[in-house]
Length: 295
Image (tube, rainbow, N blue to C red; front, side, top):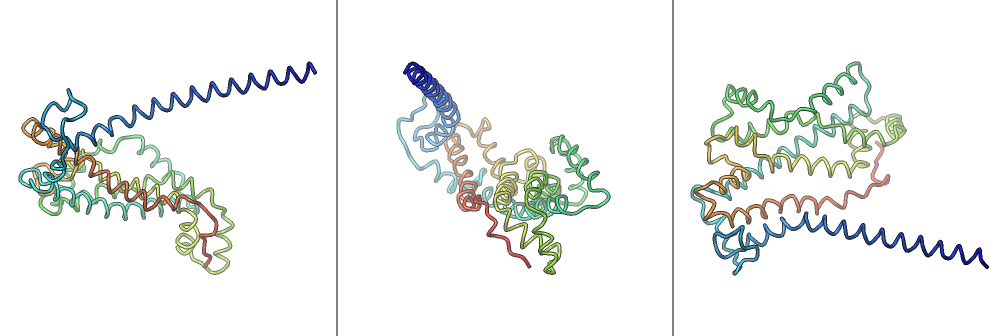
């Protein structure tokens, strides 16, 4: 009886200790969630603020309006938000397609093929990846200028080349995922007469939907959110400005009073395409072997 009583006390003590730790953990996570969500909520609230100014002193506005969103699409003088939005969308979509193909193709080659300079290439990519891309910003600009790609509509071509040109070096994460797929599937497909390209498209890709979603999202978000390269290449070509440059201009001294609320509205709007892509593609996170087709 004493043994059973002692075990019951120990069990109750362990259960109480676990409950206390769970409570502490949940409180800690709740605090972190509030810290993370609070700025997002503030930006959303400010985007509907009716009055101008006092955007720091007063958190909750006295009145709400959707005019801040309307202003982005109706006041198209110096800060033409619709044009900037379309410029960024066109560039991001094209870069997303090109970069995703580059990354997945290089990852497949590094994972499945064996050639003499394979390890050397991987080491070079890893070393280059340690340096931020904007270190080459000046050299890239003068190369593009020499090619005549820094004026007019060709700026979009220049930005597409900049964002997608070296994207293949970011293959490491996709390669790690491809390494987890059994090579016996490749061998079975090759026995059935499949080429390497067919193995890639009909065996590997259907089994790699989670990493494809990750690759597409990162490939789209890069040009969609980038400011440094876009600012350097566009310079004073206002018609080719991207959303990031437009939002930055709204915070300049001569615009901030009139445009700050609309700046918050623009910040909300640029999150919509990313959210749509994630919602549409999140179902592909479910990984399964049933997607493979040998042939």
